Length: 525
Image (cartoon, rainbow, N blue to C red; front, side, top):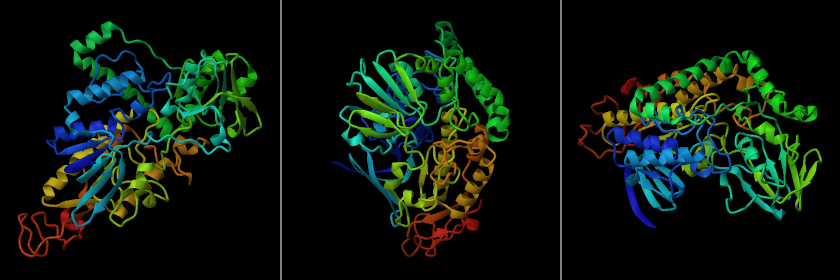
């Protein structure tokens, strides 16, 4: 067991959010931090998802940090191996390796109200931190549904995010469960190799063509020689997606033309009317995530593929049985059934100021002030928190906005001086969440007539941001202290080094007795 270590900031996770936070901390002059990673290397979801065909559905030049442009992306939509290599490159270029603590899965973290710090138990030892930045991400913990008989299945079973590369699918009878973003990449990748593929589809996705191509050597040379061309390319990709937001958030009826294009994409490959009927969604495009593929439909039309338009209901030995009674004999089951998004497991391990876990606090639905701060969890922030997801653009844009907020959060603590913490006021969290949910009511994600992983069990959309990335950047440009309670550490009688007297009055004008919260009006807006 490693020795206890105290740091100013502990970052949880080393995907885009965690590495971005680490870079921003160094740029802010903060070097007293660690990045706690449960695996043995960086990469987050791009390390874990290594299934055949894995690639990003956001253009490469937009799916990268603005502060670390990559002129050498090989394709317009890069594959998993290239994105993971990019994150390793960022780790090296920005000198992050000394801060990394691998194989350090967080088991529990609890707020110490007396010491004003987080006590963190990990698989690699114990840590304490003044501030925690949780960047575990919503697509990190696979979800496998409870299927009767699954435990007794004699063949191979794995989730797409935990691909077993030692198991050879060639010549096997395979069941693919799910038709989400991972499944539509896996199906065309494995279809030529397997003896037979049975696809269990609960809800058909809308699939648009994937306009992917190799980026030429000449383009890459241009981007290396003239870096502003890389930024211009990124800016164009960003601008196009910003203009699309209105249709998703305010005018879903305008998406009818996009549906026509998607149907045409299907019709080119699927000639069988019965199969086409199975694959045609009955909800507005955009309600569920729009998928990109030019190979998915052609793969489904092959003679060794069956599409079962019903979810997997039970397993009897090596026989998989759909809810409608359709059955098939298979050697392997691959689950492409998504992740714990609205019930993130990390929430069970975070214990706040009142002794409740974050999961208990979020029992009625996730909510956080500006997608970052949860009430009752002082000096704790999350990257890609509630209602920060996107339906049409790059999450890196949202991550960088949250990093701006994190940086100002730490500046505010520095200005307050001494041992202090910020805790989001319940009223501020509620007001922010009410505003978000009101805007959500008219969006395609709420009105499109589908059930998606964007919604929590109560039907509330707690994942997607109902606006543009520009709006979110403005909303997270700075921390408004009026939205937070300021907590001071218990002070000994008499003056201390911060200039506070025995009542806790200090140079900020905030007044609090030992361990209590300063009134918002006294610390200013």
